[in-house]
Structure formats: C-alpha cells, structure tokens
Amino acid sequence: MKAIFTKDEYVRYVEQKAPKSKVMKNILRAFLVGGVICAGGQLITNWLKARGVPAENAANLTALILVCVGALFTGLNIYDEIGRFAGAGSIVPITGFANSIVSPAMEFRSEGFITGVGARMFVIAGPVLVYGISASVIAGIIYYLLRF
Amino acid sequence: MNNIFVSILSAFITGGIICAIGQILIDRTKLTPARILVLFVTSGVVLTALGIYQRLVDIGGAGATVPLTGFGYSLAKGAFKDVEQYGLLGAFTGGVKATAGGITAAVFFGYLVSVAFKPKPKS
Amino acid sequence: MAEKRIGRQTIKIQNPVRIVSAAGIVGPKEGQGPLRHYFDEIIEDELWGEKSWEKAESKLQRETFAKALNKAGMSTGEVDYVIAGDLLNQCIASNFGLRESMIPFFGVFGACSTMAESMSLGSMIIDGGFADNVACLTSSHFCAAEKQFRFPLELGSQRPPTSQWTVTGSGCVMLSNKGTGPCITHVTTGKIIDMGIKDANNMGSAMAPAAADTIIGHFYDTGIAPESYDLIITGDLGRLGKNICDELLRRQGLEISDRYNDCGAMIFDMERQDIHCGGSGCGCSAVVLAGFIYQKMQKGELKNVLFVATGALLSPTSTQQGESIPCIAHAVSIRI
Image (cartoon, rainbow over all chains, first blue to last red; front, side, top):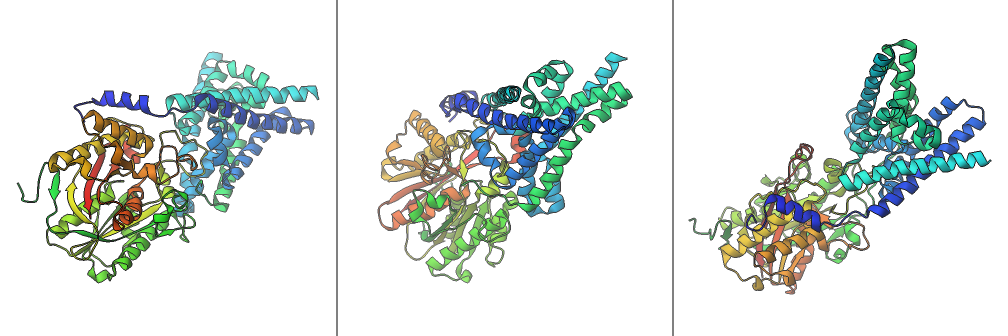
C-alpha cells in the first residue's frame, strides 16, 4: 500500500472521495426546526407574561417548560427522530440539553439506578455545566476587578 | 396582537440563525454534539461579558435565550448581578443561582423520564 | 519454511477442512434487507426477550451456535473447540453466550474481522490434527455497539454520510475433517495496517487499505489467478470503502471489479434503509457468509470464494486520544 500512497496522501484521497454532507439542506433544516423551538419558547413567555408573571420569572419558567418537553420527547423516542432531521436545530436549543441528559441515562439503566442512570446522566451535559459555570465565574471575577 | 406576532417572528429568526451556525460547525468541522454544546454555552458567557448578547436578547427574546448560548447568557448575567450585590462572592453564587431552575428541572425530569421509558433503536 | 506455509502471509490447508454446516440469525432491520431469504431466523425486536442489548447479543450467539450444531447433526460433545469473539468489551457476548456450552473455548478479538480470524485458526487446528470439529462464530448488535462506541440511541444527533450501520446478527460455521460441504483451502493472515484515518465515522475508508493489502498478499503468495474465483468478498467496507479498495487494487495492477463485492454493501438496501455507507460489525460478514455465500456454494452457484473479513482495531479510548485507526483483514479461500 505504501507504494502508491503515503498516509497524508491517503487521508487527502479519502477526503476527496467521501460523500459530503448536504450542507445547504442541513442548514435550512436546522434553521427551521431551531427557529420553531425558539418561537415556541417565545409563545410560552408571552402567554406567561399575559398572565401576569414578571419578565424574569417568565424566562426562567419558559426554560423549565422546554426542558420538561425535551425530556419527555426523548423518553417517547421522538427527539432522536427530530434530531436526525434537524441536526443542530434540535441540539442547540435547551431542549437538546435535556435530550443530552435523558438519552444516556435511559441507555445505561441496565447498569443500575446509581452507576447507570445517576452517573451517566452527565456524560454529555456534564462538560456543558463545567465549562459554562467556570466561564461565568471567570467573567464574574473580571467584572469585579473592573468595577472596584 | 401585532407586537406578539413580531416577537414570535424575531424569536424564530434569531433562534434559527443561532442553530444554523451550529449546523455549519457540525458539517464543516466534524464537532460532536457534546463539543457544540460546550462551545455554545461558553460563547454565550463571553458574548454576554462583552455586552453583545444582551442586544441579541433585546431583539430576539426567546430566540436568544432558548439556545444554549442563552444558558451562558443567564450564567454570566447572574454572576454580574450578584457581583454588584455581594462583591467577589457573587462571581461564585450568581451563575448557578440564575440558572438553578433549568438545571434542576433537567436533572429532575431527566431522572423521571429515564426511569419511566426505554430506549428503542431507530428502524 | 514450515511445510504448509507457502508465503509471507499464507498457508495451504493440506487435509480437507470442510464447512459442514452454517447458521445465521439477524435483527429486524437486516431482515428487511435484500438478503433476508438467506437467514435462518429474523428476530422480531433487538431485545429478543432479554433485559439488555448485551444479553440479547449473547442469546444471538447461543442460538446461532445451537442451530449450526443441529444442522451438522452433532452433539456438543463432538465439538472439540469453539472459537468465538465479538465487539463488546472483553468479548462478553461470546463469553456469556457460550458459558453453558461446556466445550473447550478460545475467545478471539479481531473486531469485524473475527469471522475470518476464527475460521483461519479453526482450519489450522483441524489441519494440524488437533481437532475433528471446530465451531467458529461471532456476533454484533447495533444497540450494544452504539452504546459502547458512539452515542446513546435516543440522542438527537445526525449520522455523517460516511457512517455505517452495525449489523445485529450472529453467524456460525461448523468446520470438520469429515462430512460434506465446501473446503477451506488457503488462509491468508492480514497485517495491521494504519493509513492514518482518524474518523471513527469513516471505518470503510480506514479498512480498505488493509483489505487491499491482504488480497494482494493472497494472490502473491498463492499464485492463484484472480479469475479462478467467482467471488472475492470483503467484510464490511461499505459502499465507500469497497469503492476505495477496488481502486487501490486497480492501481496496483489487480483488476477484480467484475467479481468483487462487499458484505456491508450487500446486506442493506442502500436507497430505502437510510444506512448511509452500508453495514458493519462482526455479524455483517458472518451472516452473509453463513447465509448467502454458504447457500450459494451448496447449490453450486458459487464455486470458489475468497472471503476477506475486515476489522477496525480501535477503541473508544483510542478515538478520544486522537489516535488513527489500525485495521486488519483476514482471508480464507473456500472451494467446492
């Protein structure tokens, strides 16, 4: 094999031969589904506000409801179908965060409630919390130093 | 009525664009979903700190707060708010405090659902 | 050189080693594919009455072995060795599936090349006079493999266009020095080949150079003319890998396109079944061999087959550490 390709040449050859993702189609689908989920969120927020919930709480409550819906759709074996169609359109919204918590937990239930469900819940979502929270602490410290 | 329609439309467009950016990253860079989520939440924190994300929230509403960048926005905004109130301690309490509802809901509903349902292969 | 060794990678089997029976059981998706009529049983759902995917895969091996044993008209006491392996960590599908068999057992790991690896070793054991009957089997399970190597089933992620679908299924062949059935005549053992592909969602491309290397080694060592085979079949390169392997061979002066196929490219309906580049997994080549190829040989529709099972020797750890994928291909030559 080395006679005709070096490793680098082979990797490049494969890249050129491999079927490509249909990028435009995928982007359009992600835009539509992501947009619909967010519009749904706005709808919930508007409804809550109309019922007299203060703006801050309305946003929090919206997140809570969407997380609940995302978790439920995952359990009903629907979210993965949406994800197959929408890609980032259903990964990026907070419903996708719920999906990333529920899906490994469901999968590893056969390993028990503690080491299976409990531990595996955060296989994907764990890093999000680690980096999100750490970044917010750093941002907070910088803000503190700039202010005082 | 008109206002409501505009707010939903701008949420749709803002959220759609943020998700489309995620899709470009997946297709072009082969980033896994876990990396996309981390990247988005961290970007949300950074953009909020730079004062950019607040403007996006003002325009897009839920379109900016529902994507994971919005989670980063809540974390950073909460940290800043608590820093103003409690000083340096706030950097450690504000972020999680502001997002406690979402995180707790994810853990609690996540647990309930994963105990109640079974995974099925895609056929 | 050892008397049965005819080249760097190849041995010639001198005493007859026959495949006296073969059995294959597959999952529901494979049961909707174009080869569905060649399988002994199609299970209705991936759990098959068990509590976990892993247990279901063990049951696949247990039942497939029982079918092959039954077809050969043998009792477990007549089988001298079982050689088996699978994709799960520590090969638990084989270890647990065969723990009640009470037959001397060799566990092997060759990733998806396991079927050809176990048949290679089984042929040598029989030819060497160490056994009369040896069972060779392997399995893979879509859900168990996804869980171990990729993402949870319910995670809403997209599969890239180069990805392949792990076959749910188990295949078993019974080798014997007596009886009737196609003979194993040559064994060409592959070398570990790594051409630097790092994408675990593009296994076909990673494995293609290993397949091409073993095929060329086989013809170089044996001096057999490629035209004497009706079918040269690789294990689970899929549509893309098959294409690349074919081109690699052509560039090295070996033209086999008219008699070359790939189990991974055959087992599913590419247009209807949404499996991107094709099937993969230990079970893929095993069920195609035990079903399609074996039955065609029994009927005389295929006379000489070169079976080249391909394996990607990676682990989730090596992928996370950014390693490229070492691959292997083992070939057995089967004639009636």
